[in-house]
Length: 216
Ligand code: PCA
Image (tube, rainbow, N blue to C red; front, side, top):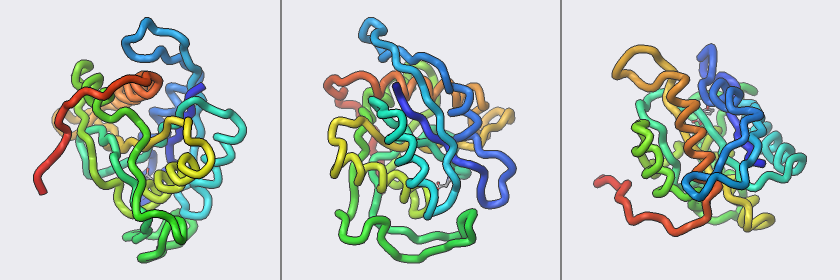
């Protein structure tokens, strides 16, 4: 089983493509990418509240209930046109807008006393290669922001580090779903990209030395 999470709408948006896409994948059986296709893993989808208090609690509950082999948490990054494979979760919350509870903490840790950051446990470079092969726009991102997505990502990786070191887990941001050419990705493309991310997450192999970096 592979657990995918998406978020409810926030910040005045009417929908959140992270949940719309993840919901479309629920119940599918995803084959590991390029290794003979077995064993397939069923996708379970969970919708998270966009709140600092509730998002990780809900994801933790779903992990406990389903005992997945891999977890890919997904959120919306409204200003991007690519799928962003998040490399790092930082131990700070600095909210620019209130969450859906009205909370807007500034400069507080996600986990008091926790390390400054965690790296994603997803195979980012083989995922990037797979997305390029599928002609889907994707980048490796070195910041997931300082809002609810980063906090959820950090709490997820902290859980993995402390309690479930064999659980493959990480975070992916998706753009707004749009039908305007050149402005982002269609919902179908986002669904396809998340299917590719899930399929790549199921493969435990060496990572290609593929640059995903940037200068400052
Ligand atoms: N995106 C926000 C929170 C929920 C979502 O989908 C973020 O990037 O923090």
